Length: 213
Ligand code: ADP
Ligand code: ADP
Ligand code: ZN
Image 1 (cartoon, rainbow, N blue to C red):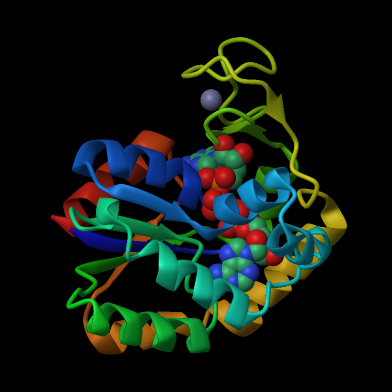
Image 2 (cartoon, rainbow, N blue to C red):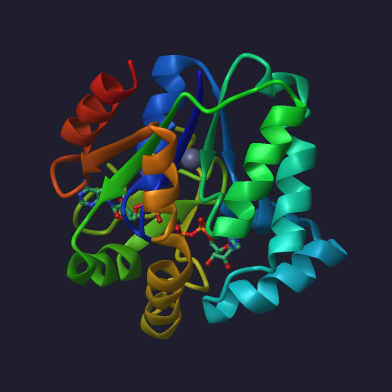
């Protein structure tokens, strides 16, 4: 199954993606995680991406599109994949359609996690991420068993550089301007699955699994 999960920053895409790829045994492709890995490796691409990410701006389309195109050709995508955080612009969505076509692949469903925008700031400023496996926690809404330590891999939890009020404000604006139009784009393709992301994490996953099966 080839899936896409979208929604505003902080909607719970990463959190849900973790549960979905376990249940469906498909490959998780998060462009945000790929950029953070590139930054950690010290690559040129990482350095360039970091300038945009820290401000909360989108990385230019040509950089993201090239990276995803290459990633989708890896063998681990043949058994199904979940794209998380891509596409974020109509240009990216069109490039994805073209790439999938050239690989004789298609999207089975687009999961849209919906959360009222006024709830996202608290989710993002309280987010903590595992350095080891990338799992997402929250200091109040989804606290780890042991402070600062990942439940699944015992990795160290940290706060992302871009999870501050200023950057979150810019990201929400970028979402409304550039990403929200994708809702109509995927509705027109008949693959759009709206999900209420403003409920218990496990309830959200249940709703998603019903919607994609
Ligand atoms: P995204 O990948 O969409 O930016 P995350 O999955 O990282 O979002 O979640 C953002 C923050 O909100 C994290 O701190 C996460 O623990 C928390 N969170 C995720 N889902 C829920 C939920 N259903 N209710 C409350 N908090 C949530
Ligand atoms: P969030 O959890 O806020 O949804 P991500 O981890 O998905 O954030 O992405 C972090 C940052 O990486 C974004 O704010 C943006 O700068 C960059 N980024 C990730 N995916 C894309 C994309 N598809 N297009 C442009 N920039 C992206
Ligand atoms: Zn971990």
